[in-house]
Image 1 (cartoon, rainbow, N blue to C red):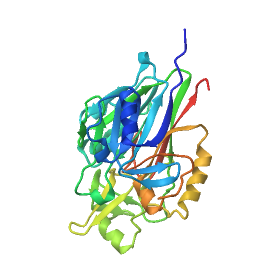
Image 2 (cartoon, rainbow, N blue to C red; image 1 turned 120 degrees about the vertical axis):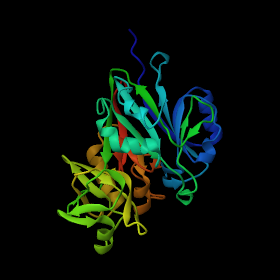
Image 3 (cartoon, rainbow, N blue to C red; image 1 turned 90 degrees about the horizontal axis):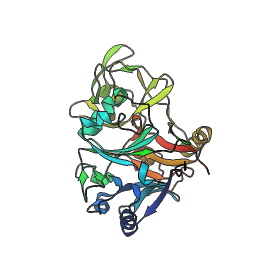
Image 4 (cartoon, one colour; image 1 turned 90 degrees about the vertical axis):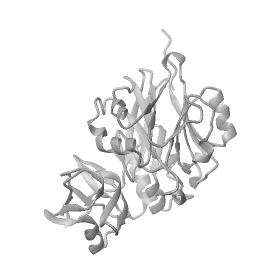
Amino acid sequence: MAQDADISIRSALINRDQLIEKINKGEYLVIAADESVLTDLPSGNWIAGTIPYFMTAEGGKVDREKIFVNTIEGVQPNNAPRITLYDGNSIARIAQEAPEHGFTIIILPAMSEVHLSYAQNAPDYPNMYFSPIIGWISGVHLDDIGSRSAKVGFGPARGMLFDQQAVAMHIPLPTNQLANINIVNLFSQGDGPEIKFKSTGFSVSDCTINGEAANLADYIKYAKVDTRLPLVANYSGVMINVSIQQVNESNNKVDLYAPVFADISYRFAKPVENYIESFNKELSASASEGISFSCNCILNYLYSELEGKKTRDLTGPITFGEVAYQLLNQTLVYLSISGGSR
């Protein structure tokens, strides 16, 4: 029996005409671009998310006209990827609907109901961690925050952009290939006090600091905490960041880019001296196979001033959050596909 062709992912920064040509050829595409470019694309085998920030071969870049596209190559008609739309309720099925042997790429719009649902509940979804799930949170140009909403595009329905639903591409692999997800997180817990919360949420106020009742907004102001540093939880050696969006003076709350979880121990992160140097060191230690798909956080782009700077040979969207099974912040995630005949 003939063996299926190997699956690979090719990435490129292209213009709208080139993208339409690829869509019309029936190629399987994962697309990142400003909303203005994604409007009214032809129907086809694609999913998309709004974002005008990219890691390119030349370095970090903001571009409202270009499109970053990942092309899934080697697709066989008898084993083609499946494209699915999810809402806040049906997203719980994503791991159950993942390919038995393969991986899933998901895009969720920032601050939507489905984003909140996934962020809070993904670790408990049925079959989670059985099949690799990687992806990103779509966003907007930073100048447009408050005036435009993040969206996703669902290729099978022409011109359909959604701000309350997620899209996923479930991609089967031949048996001789294997997908692996890796997380590059430069942050670890600092030496500050232990912080715990009574409830799970994206907006917090009351907490305990070293066991004493406190208000997080007050503590940040009193201790002059650098809010570019995330809160970090240590899950059995895996560091999970929760990034600070803003300290809201009007209600004395702290708004977050990901939820904190009740009764989990957090500490503010240690500062990172040199992002590019630290990143390259971390990546060389963890990258063993060719990298097929990656995305990096907008906060890394901003706080580490990545515009024009290269993050090794990784390319992809710069996002409002990353998915490596669960929702992450201030990380870079990547997928490698090992095995195959090449």
